[in-house]
Length: 337
Image (cartoon, rainbow, N blue to C red):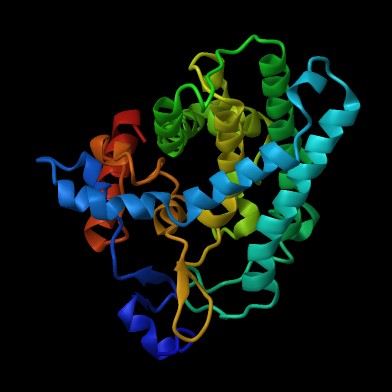
């Protein structure tokens, strides 16, 4: 079977007359939130929670901590030398990850529009975007705001650890606790993201903080961290949990690397990245793509079903469309519009 053959798309999804591609498999909540408890489904789900993405981000965090971060005792005082080193490391990782996805999918266009949710390519001549280019604006906000804010939080965190201001635990002394904390970090990231993201959609905060990111109705990899500096400050604030919860610096590094690098994958605009004629990597970002498409749905991710609980979930089906339109109409009626 050739995954680059459009004839095979019916196995994975369908494309409508407008060119929008929808996967056959609908987003579903994680089985840990299904009642009654289904142990077998949870065990089958757990490898997908860990592999490949969360394991990859943790591996990058470990490598960064042991090989690309100055020793803690050298970070007891703020100095430009070690801060710039961290900034350089984060910038290089960002270029490799975001630029890698972009180069394969949007420059080389190895799979053309196969498995692309929106058949259109990023705008290159639009007054909506800085420099007239969606990608150029995305790169600007990512590199000139996202990476510096990420680095500022990281520098503050290492300075706090180095001076003994944060509650510290060691893997050797508390291996089970530290391992559980590693497993919980991606879930905390999702919870924090939902809370921050939901607030940014309220009233004037949307225009003041979040509007820059939502220019990307048809997102690409560089759209992931394309946002205002105020949004970056809120987004990366998830690392502050380590200021109150006992943890090891590796936990904080995992949190920051996950926050800094995962948006590239969740904004590729493609459901799958084709590796060869028979294999593809599932990026699984349809749920968040629908948020960019409709704005008022899917504020969080699928593992914690907050959108389901609050009635803002959308799985791409016509029934979800109907629920969304009714909810928006009711909201307008309540406002007197």
